[in-house]
Image (cartoon, rainbow, N blue to C red; front, top):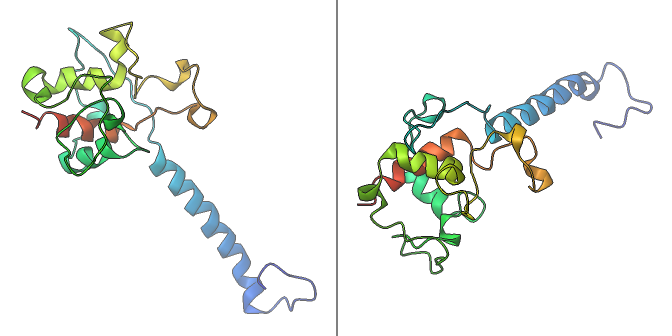
Length: 164
């Protein structure tokens, strides 16, 4: 066993590999954490919109569509009806999102995903990209994080603007 050093020959290959295996494990965890949560980017809203893409990122509509249906991601289907026919269950709490790309610009959709409460303070829709320093009443796993990354928000925006 690599971790059992009792009586190990210090010249053995398994003992020499231990520091490298430890370094690989640390790097893997660090990279996984970095990819799981990007650094928070400040944003500005004006006229009920966020004009600039978060962190200057470009969204991908295919990733956005997958995220909208992902119960561990955007989970838009929990509250909204959407043109994602392969998913049998759609919510009815929020407005249907078919045609949202005709009703709103990308900048308006972005603010609705990031922080709908800036538009409607009484909404039950969560802010998916609020400043984590001001978060409250959230599950422990989300402390210090946004619900979605900036990339995920931009992917959703890119998908939703296609719904004409």
